[in-house]
Image (cartoon, rainbow over all chains, first blue to last red; front, side):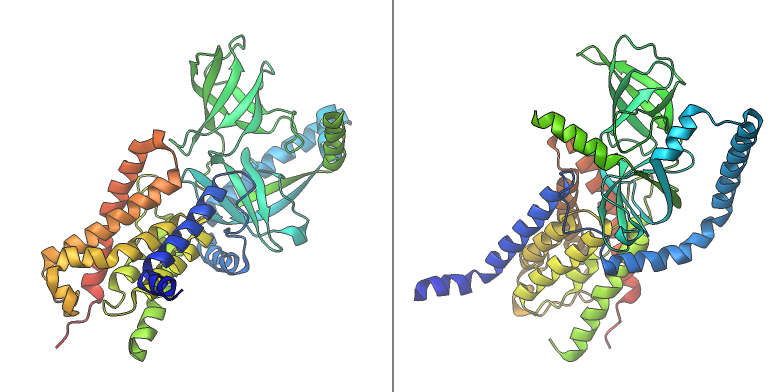
Length: 272
Length: 169
């Protein structure tokens, strides 16, 4: 017994190091799997507060650009509403959109885009009825989806994250695939598993597919910049994002009102 | 440690943490290069103080950075690693004089100081990027990030130490 205690005292530095190193490795491994990065996240009270103070100050430097973006969006919405007035009835797509999805605005207080797993922190949380797995967009296009919320803050797993896999399709031909990121360029993501039959040309638009309950169909993503044919007879397409992921300041969170019902339905299917 | 040193180290801990998460994590020079200057805390931690305390504080500092950067535990792991290795590196860089607690970082030659800082920074960065990227197929990216971020960090740390060390009379 005495020897064991002596051993502990003699090696206390190494044992402490080993313990702490293993703890941090566990956190690291957790953070590499989707939905599991529970403990270490910037949605906690302290870092949320610090980032809010910071973005309150740095937000002013960016006002001009953000105003231009808002103007652009306003003019587009005005154009849409004037068109709707003329025809007196909204198009079917619009009406389903507005019925099933709710949009909430939020401010980005921290945005990381230079790592391999990037997250964005926003200033809305569960008291603003945000939940995990809600989609996030800007007026220009897709951003990512929420993967952690605290009371006042939320964290978005951006599309610039190797864990992200979002259902997307070609606007022209409805062939769908999955949007992933190869970590090389913060402006370019990859659309994989598009069948070889699909007619694609450079410059085609990529939109979200309607196959998930997270995003409504038809949210803009980007344009085809380049493509290669993989061994398994499918395309891997480089998509240039419409969004500038390095300069985000306001985002919209999409809430699907029928999500519960859809998930219930899907889970009963699985059970059978 | 004396009271004075405790205050200085607490102030340094908080100051470097905030500097790192608010300014340095967002530099993104050439798209992905960030300096990690919070290592100054581990580099300058009193040489004669408890090694156990240093290991624990390194972990705490790294974990705090992780909370802000949403990076799991990569900074904590890298920091606790260099915190543990520091005595070895000190001995390697400064030779036997370290054994007698006679070393002061602002009194050694530039060569020795440079060696110490470079070793610490590159070991830290290598562990950091290996864990952050976490894939053997991206080995080149790991080495590239380590090299460029490391050079940036060494430069920044040397400048900071040059500016802020008080000349002892």
